[in-house]
Amino acid sequence: MNATRTVSESGGLPAHHIDAFLDRLRTAHYSEVSLRKKRRVLCVFSGWMKNRNIDLIDLDESVTARFMNRMIDASRDRVQRARPTLRQFLAYLRAEAIVCSPTLGGQSEIARIYRRYLDHLRQDRGLAKNSLLVYGPFIRDFLDSHSANDGTILADAFCAVTIRDHFLTYSEGRSAEYTRLMAVALRSFCHFLFLRGDTARDLYESVPSVRKWRQSTVPTFLTPEQQEALIASADRSTPTGRRDYAILLLLARLGLRAGEIVAMQLDDIHWRSGELVVHGKGQMVEHVPLPSEVGAAIATYLRDGRGASASRHVFLRRLAPRVGLAGPAAIGKIVCQAFARAGFRPACRGSAHLFRHGLATTMIRHGASIAEIAEVLRHRSPDSTAIYAKVAFEDLARGSRARGPRREVQYDFDP
Image 1 (cartoon, one colour):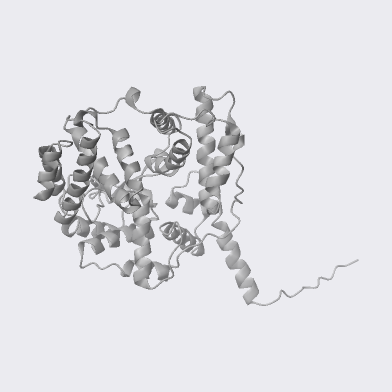
Image 2 (cartoon, helix red, strand yellow):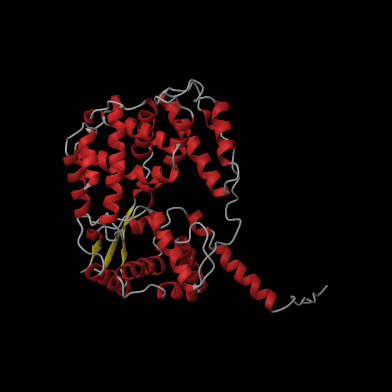
């Protein structure tokens, strides 16, 4: 009650808009505890707006960014809690036409560049949404690091020295995979700038090379026994356990990628024909058989675990808002939790992919050809599957060592 009175008296944000916003979240199954926290954030934000004579009609990302910068001095934890609330509230106001949606011309310079870069990746390069989520943050960090407070790009941002120094600074102490992805993103951005005419030449060579030996190691994988232990660890007496059980089966039996599971829609399951439509990498769409065990697990979750939601995604978040999983990292978290329940050593990055490697390894050890594995894993390039041949070679070498040293055979030849 006090929170509502504070908002209405502040004049920064009209109380009825905040009440309507919270009612909308309440219908999305947010808890009352979460709603109270969000109301407190909006109260503080409203008072901040009033002190600076900022009207509701002027509210946009630049205003919330200024508020966040002020809050950082007080508490970074508070910033992390406030950011999603303000983002949701602004989206609600725009959806209800209370404030205007941003036009490209009204955005800051770095926001326009970033949006056009993502459009380039999506439309010209054909990258899927999950790929944008991987490469986009690297470029956003670069733009934020080389811009003024008003969102304009610094004069020396798009030069070879700046790009190289940024890469060397932000890759220090990072893993080889993180560094490689940053290099790929920055080279792509350099090419984009050259195509736009922002640079006189393509500056991709300013990004140092990151060496990655192809097929240098045998892929890490889960044995069939380990996979079964992880699957059995899901508590199917709870809605979350039924969801996780179905996801683990999709990983183990079909070798689906984490992003493919996240993207699954209700219409992708063809129950009568026993098929599943998979939206794979590179915007590829393929039909794969749906094993009865997997289909039964999905059906059980849909009937007794998923609950009502306007979302068409098969697998939903456990907590509000009841929408599809945020991304592949959510699948990785589910797998890591299964590792903990099963008493296994915590998996490294890419834990969900261990199931995919395990499926391929089991197939090759049962006599499947590389071509058959490529078909099951839906690889477009033979190089992607060739690494599993190393598993067969390692098995042969291990068997040879177990039999002891090779006996030399003498051959007699007639003169």
